[in-house]
Length: 348
Image 1 (cartoon, rainbow, N blue to C red):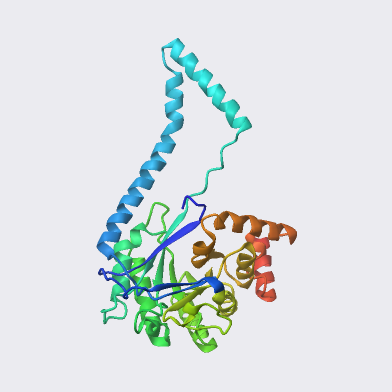
Image 2 (spheres, rainbow, N blue to C red):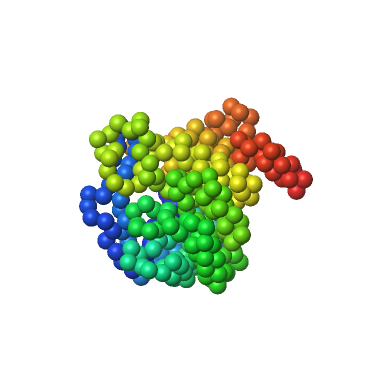
């Protein structure tokens, strides 16, 4: 979060601990700027994760309370009866103000959001139970929840994307989400579903209908791919597992474009797949993504990638006369884009 991410997602988390698939299970495709993984939902289990989340939220709350109390501490010190002590503190305060004028501090970053991605145990035989357990146990710590039904590394998991199973799952997940207590903002965490990029047009249409019918808040588009483009050059390209990174950038962007159109731009989309530059973000936003996630390119470009993307994106938007991300989201869809833009203008 301190690196500048607007949100961070953990998981996938399964109810019971499981080791995942045997190692080696992650392979770099250096020549292609991609990765193949077959982790298989390796997870420490929901009990351990819940303890970690309790500690994280407690630490976060303590830090926020500490920051709120700082102004009061300063005013109390100035009210000291010791004249010399007060004079010293005033002098130090003036010096700090002068230093801040010449060396302004970095602006405080807004609070990052925490997403919790839920998965299913490999040995589980129930369609919805593992996800319901995850929502019930971890939902109170989440800023948003993700139902992951698209990993290619858990046998049978992608079958949950089919017409009837996905409806049963999303309805059960939404019921369980609605049972959660309200948070401090008097709301409950949005519920998203994560889909594969390898779906046919008819499957995408069916999923979009299910998402709308079940009132799901958003879609993560997309997970890793089973496809192997002919352009791959790495010797690791034949490894079994899900392909991510640059090789699936266009595949995932096209999937975003289709899903945005199918939902009429009315469902929040998180764009994932091969994001490594401001231009990549811009293309995914034009296709219909409101935000993006980064995975594989962090491996190749390091933590400085976040700042570079933000700088590049702002420069692209400036060159195109765009001042807000809403001027970009869905731009590839003329009719939907201008309809939404007109609606926003009328609401002002």
